[in-house]
Length: 132
Image 1 (cartoon, rainbow, N blue to C red):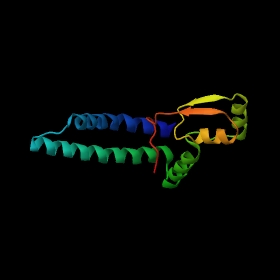
Image 2: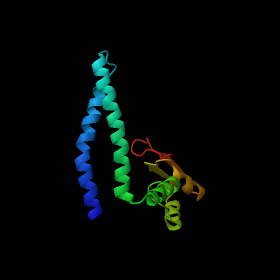
Image 3: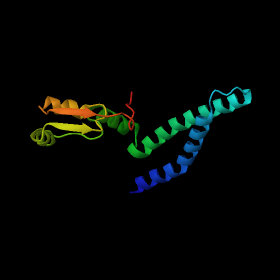
Image 4: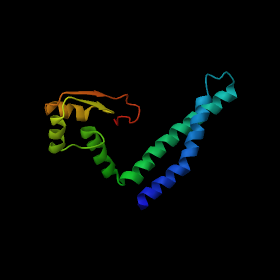
């Protein structure tokens, strides 16, 4: 609970700063004025650095050590966000054919297909970037 509160507090603090920079960067088009170009370049750089810092700090708050973060990254590359069990695969197979929405990178789809499930999977990949 303490970890959740700390993460919530962090997001509440850094969110408005990130949003403000995002809006500034969005307003920066192909500006002809040299001073405007420098301001936009500075805002882009600051935004990029802040995004990297926020990703690193939220990962530390969420997962703890670098080792835990690496284990989580390995887990998600194999399973997606949630691991499966043989029982889950068998139950889903009993209800085949299925349509999976929010399939991510297709780890579940591939495993279900290997298990004999007739599946069609969709995802627009808008909510979770693939790590490395």
